[in-house]
Length: 441
Image 1 (cartoon, helix red, strand yellow):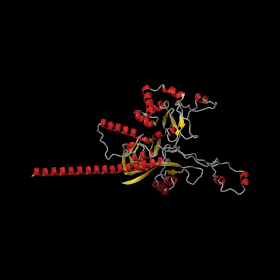
Image 2 (cartoon, helix red, strand yellow):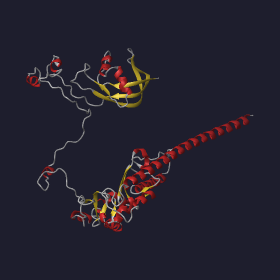
Image 3 (tube, one colour):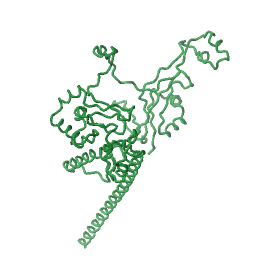
């Protein structure tokens, strides 16, 4: 069966106009060139004489599974009966469709006359002033750049409401967005003069919002900051076994947020200054950004693909239990690095005390008793963060390679079991054949 390439031409192609339709596509060679290029769209020009005033339309490639069928209709002149007969000519695997809009076709404003040669200037004389002062016979400007989009914009258009139009800031200038209502206190934990002073208490708005939080949750958050002065939101959510979203209001009433420094994106208890406490270096954060070569994907579920797909009649209780265990493990790994396991995402924030690797902890405690503050490495030795990232990257690469080899072994084992089952079936069929022959005898 022959295989066809279908191009859904946006024009009516009548008998005898096939050559013109192919010329609008650039000819057979251009069609072959476009088809052989994976990332190239099919271009169609309505005017084929190379007019600079027109812009073509573009068709997108789609993979399909279809047949090219010829249907002929026969009518009996005496009885009026209509009979349709179909014939399969071949298969269709590739289709080009022109679904976008065409751009404006810019033409001179004189009907019946071709004045493109008059308005198409070939060059400019050396005396630019003479060229500018020369009167033009036809004032016609070709657009310098055509639009790059051929799909309509479906975004909603709306008028600015009267309330938003009347909203102003303290200086009387109009604003288009509401002011922040979280009342979070942002602090740069850096050495003077770049750093900010440590706030002693929360803003009045944050204290007022904290009263609306559930008492049990507020007590849990306050007790957590009494036990430990520095938390990331993920680590605190894991400690309290709650969702990160419920901490949005409660956490800003108990701690301030760090915007810059070794404790970036941490929440620190009001009144506590980590720049004066060398023992707080274990709570410094490491922004771990994993490269794609380590095998870490956007989701933890895509680390290892199972060798076999579970049957559709499997018990839902077992799958839900496994999903719950997987979610629990992913929640823990979001705030704690465990050697031999891949993180759930490619970018995470870890406290140094939550990195469970002996080599990393040796780097952290190497200068105990002789700490000196720096804005890049905090209380650790200079260059410690770079070395810690190297250890984490090496461990993740090693883990990804082990998981890949394990996946290969599982696939080979599954294939071997399938082959063994086929051999057993063949042996059983042979035994049945021998028994049938013995019964015949």
